[in-house]
Image 1 (cartoon, rainbow, N blue to C red):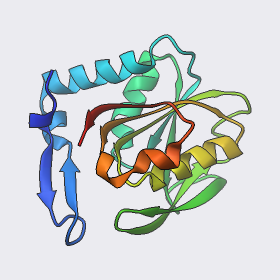
Image 2: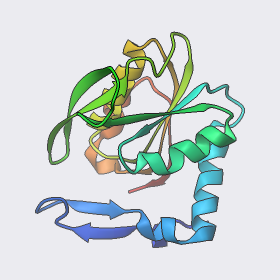
Image 3: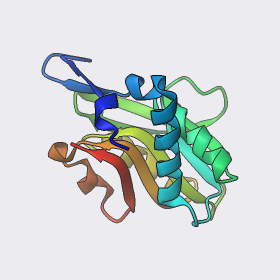
Length: 170
């Protein structure tokens, strides 16, 4: 299935000069949504996964679906101040600023196999911060997967050494 027709470019969002890749048309189409989920599952299928980490906020869409298909738990990684329990925090740079992410301190046990999922791999700062959080808790990252990879921003370089799988590349 060609997923590019289901990705909408939004100019100057969230700030001037940024072309945002909007996945909501894909989410609105039942066939595209199911196909995308199935392909993301197939990219990791056959590997043992204990936890699927989804990144705030669009990573929360596919990560729980993948966790269910993989018989794994789901772990949300959220922006600072959004999780109610004891957390670990990691700061990172994005394409258009800086931010911080947090994970519950008890979300991942030492040695657990982890799939990290987010919607877009852009500069790699967000995914790199998530990987650091997972590893600080003792998790072993099996794969990082994304709906979209923006090759021109070289985010994969920050994830050197991790297995990266994507549905679409721009």
